Length: 472
Image 1 (cartoon, rainbow, N blue to C red):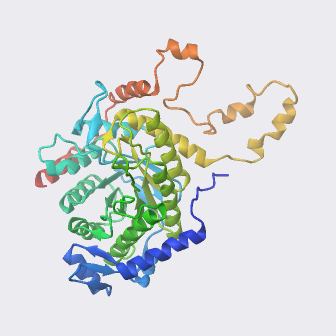
Image 2: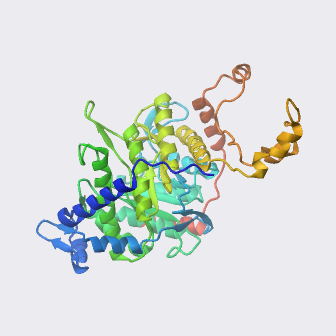
Image 3: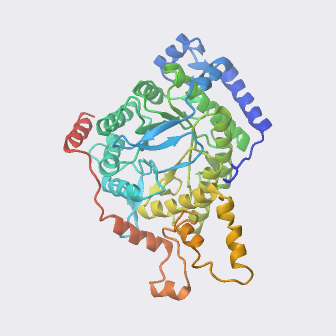
């Protein structure tokens, strides 16, 4: 059987958080700094206090939104071929996204990121079995217009990989440019099939900024799914307690859900969370802390309670180096995100509280993800795998397992995870091969993968991409 989903909340505790959320949305409400959205919600019958720009959401509006949101939806690649299903509680892994700096493979120095970094990142993702989707890894710093960093990065991914794309911005114009780029490159039916997902965020505590609301209203008619990702900070923009932090995230996320479903009933949506704790001793916001990992489990439980597809961030680390802290924070955060049943887990390749990327980190994170998914898959138990007849046939102190047909049949079955970078074998062999650590092995793999050339879009499509960027 599969590993039982991790849980940190009881059924009663989930209901307590839900009822507190309904009370917050009904009695306190959220501030919306976008007059067109305010007027739209007022026209839909919600209680709007125009002078304060506050909207209060009724229990009925929330229940109706939950009932109308698809529980699953399929995602397609650039060629219009099915890639995976979101909402089946079998976690999909995405690389990226939205860092600023890059660790150079050749020098090991951290520097501003470039479009070329994104291009190679996408090409590597294309080859990695456990990367299902590509989040935009960085906002490249060498583009002609600083306001166009995201669209240039989206084009770089489109041109270097066929995998689906995950992107986010708080700027409506940039969001629209990204959607136009995806639509120009997609070989399928863009109105009905999902090639990209737009992540948009509220601002804690309990308000929506003008640009994000504008982007929501612009995105919903295109059919592109929206992941609503609040990012409350414990003790800073939300209660310091984990239960309070989770409740704040829940209220903001569900307020976004209601707005989206009122704009278009049945619109595709992801319940998202990226918990941030705050270390008061060093004034640092943290994404790889133990407590953020506890919340990743709670977030998945709430999404399952609401029967919504869900997204979280992992593997995360707050350290600035590729070291043991990086490894343990990333492994715990990714395993718990996967084992809790989050449908989409985004952040492979990032570290330093999400500010820095490296191609080496991407490769190491992909291995962590593969290990996490393998553990979550659990153990297949039936007469064939128990192999009682083989055990009895060979008997006490018997020989023959090594050459048994049963062993050969299961040898390449996926029963055991094939390592990507992990060092295995005796010390003498390891030393004879240069005594390389995992980071060195990852660096060599990056250089090998850098020689691969992608399958680019057609010249006609590339011309359209150029035209969209020039227009933007």
